[in-house]
Length: 233
Ligand code: GLN
Image 1 (cartoon, rainbow, N blue to C red):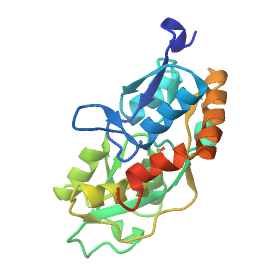
Image 2 (cartoon, protein in one colour):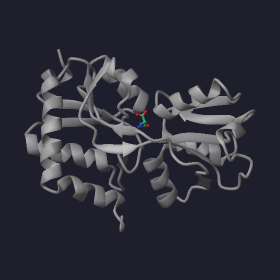
Image 3 (tube, rainbow, N blue to C red):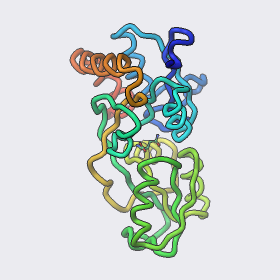
Image 4 (cartoon, rainbow, N blue to C red):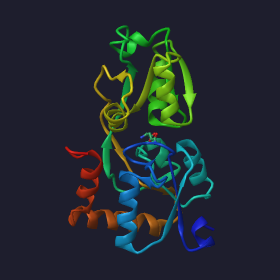
């Protein structure tokens, strides 16, 4: 039985803070690209939903155990995840980037992480990327459940670097006055998708895809992107 069957609403898991995709505005409402896309698609397709900002790895677990019906959280479509989840068509291009302290001149390549400490967020592609690098480069990993605490650990000097999605890092650098910088180009080839548990709620996935096509065609998709990451945003 899906979580949706309980009260006629789809329950959607998301991250706690992952601006500009999901974050709380000053009134405490969850806003951002993911939140607005979901709202526009639900309106277009006529379904009801409730968002649960559980955190990223908690949302993955909730989805896998059918405690939520869907997940939108700047979630990268990966082959590994496709074994567990079904994804919508991609709706945004992303990629992992390394962030270090603004004052740090000692890290100019991944190799320079040797002997250092890297902060990652549990269950993310950034975390997986750090683990891949760790096979060849000897560094320590500190894990966090959310992005804000991960950045803070680097700013405080406990960790030397963090791995984060570049649109999120770029937004944080621009809006949050973080004392961090990104010395390297992002890793390419990452795309975000909406996910359901494997072979579960297929109609929800179909509606997401159909709604995404419609809001791309009617300009709503672009309007949402412009709101958060346009020239004047
Ligand atoms: N895109 C990354 C992933 O899917 C990070 C997502 C997030 O932290 N919300 O793993």
